[in-house]
Image (cartoon, rainbow, N blue to C red):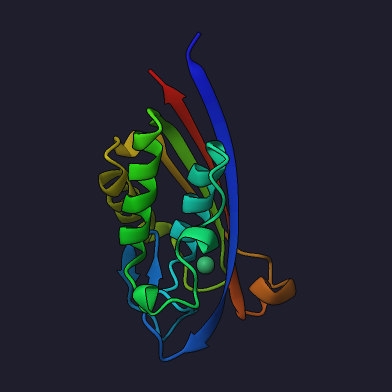
Length: 160
Ligand code: MG
């Protein structure tokens, strides 16, 4: 039987005015963005943790610490590419990933096809193996008040 493994990841970032909004690997035109040491792409961070978790490698903060100048303002796609290399180096391939983004504003539906295409390309897999869903928080809690974004991700990897 194939060696199949799964992982999950979770991340939160604060939203503030005047910052670029990077999410799912793409730049979305909006007057607010995520507060972070990197570009703040909270979806990619959760995805990286899901991939790392599938092989029990640790978490994104271990490999790319936010105290390091090296990763200041980094394009999170570079971090994802490095994580994908780690998975490949262990002899595994990515079966599929699935991401849920909770964000009150802006509406993400128009951007999801571009996000799927972008993340698929970074991971070297087909977009039909990249699920992305978006939800609001029905105006409840910190997400509902527009103060932050929460993302959950799952990843399945297998050894051919
Ligand atoms: Mg993060």
